[in-house]
Length: 108
Ligand SMILES: N=c1c2ncn([C@@H]3O[C@H](COP(=O)(O)OP(=O)(O)OP(=O)(O)O)[C@@H](O)[C@H]3O)c2ncn1[C@@H]1O[C@H](COP(=O)(O)O)[C@@H](O)[C@H]1O
Image 1 (spheres, protein in one colour):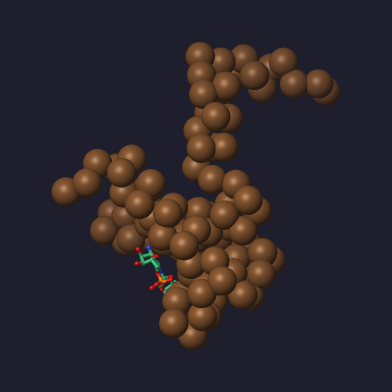
Image 2 (cartoon, protein in one colour):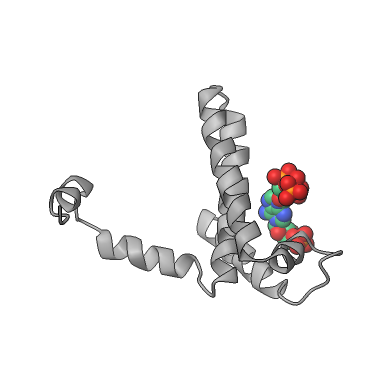
């Protein structure tokens, strides 16, 4: 089995390769064809479904819905010319900065 990172890298490459493909032959291409607003809507729906899996106490559904959420988020990032590297860079920038300290330092 691939490592988590390798799986995300492979999926990101597949998503990029779907740009310009026939929307009838590819779900990713169909998302790109529908546009950013529709992809963002799908991200919102999958986030809600992820939360509902938690409310139902269903860990199997939590994994499945989280995968749907991550997948659609990666398509959304790609549609904006961004990638998981941008998210990793932002998380790296925050490394070591407690969320409690950051929140306390926010301008009122
Ligand atoms: N990881 C995924 C993946 N996860 C979820 N999905 C699809 O996401 C959709 C979400 O289902 P929903 O019921 O929420 O949405 P829907 O009802 O079909 O759509 P709406 O009409 O509600 O908008 C389903 O069609 C899933 O099959 C995915 N589709 C593709 N991938 C990956 O993307 C690759 C490329 O896919 P294609 O572009 O289709 O070749 C695949 O090989 C996979 O690796």
